Amino acid sequence: MAPAYKPPTADEKEQYVRALFDRIAENYDAVNQVMSAGQWQKWHKEFVQCTNHKPGDRVLDVACGTGDLSMLAAAQVQPGGSVVGIDFSEGMLEVGRRRVAQTPYRDMITLQWGNAMDIQFADNSFDGASMGWAMRNVKEIPKTLSEIYRVLKPGARFVCLEAAKPYSSLVRLGFFLYWKTFLPLIDWWVMKSGRQAVVRPYTYLSRSLDSYPMPDKLETMFQQAGFRDTGYKLLMMGTVAIHYGTK
Ligand SMILES: C[S@@+](CC[C@H](N)C(=O)[O-])C[C@H]1O[C@@H](n2cnc3c(N)ncnc32)[C@H](O)[C@@H]1O
Image 1: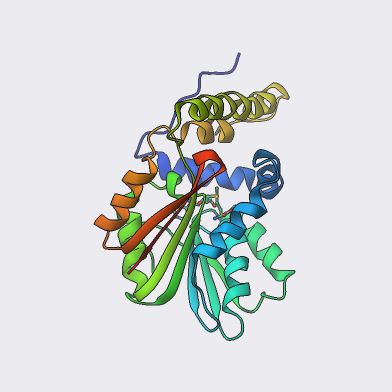
Image 2: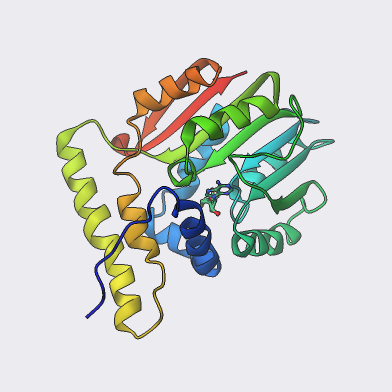
């Protein structure tokens, strides 16, 4: 019988999340398409409309993973612009580099190792920043937001796409049934088929929203980090949120 799932403590979280994404990197993009019921591209289209990248801009994609948002930003900042994606999972970066190499944006995008909570760039370095599906994975949201704020130029915008806890109790019930039963089944299947499950990626993902702030609270955290003109847009009955703010 499989041992009970034990969520990582705050101190274990970074190492756990990194190992988790290293492990699922090769299947990450395909699984997303299935898990999002084909909505992935639609959400990204909405996300792009909330950004205001312009040709020539230099954009930072925080926790870039396999580079989806980096490639979207590259399309917006050409000609003359560039995108730097940072992530702390070498496995995700490796898949991302292979994907980017097959696109016309290969010379505009650099994907490199970096931690969202300690960004290795100077103050006021970027004309815009994005973060997709990663805010709920960082150890400390306020520290991450203040780092992103620091490296943006005055007037630059940060846009964050992430899953959200819906306000409607009815939607919340349906959402949590899916989130808490279907996703852990993937780990159960992996363990049942005899493969190692040192981390349980989909059980972790199903729990990762438990302590994540509601959308209005996250907007307040943006403001506390210094962002102005903040707001958010809810999609998919409030189960996905796009937050934005300007330095
Ligand atoms: C669900 S994936 C999202 C990847 C990508 N942004 C996308 O839109 O598909 C979350 C990513 O966040 C990265 N991550 C989580 N915490 C991080 C941190 N503190 N610093 C850098 N990367 C982090 C993980 O390694 C993983 O690649």
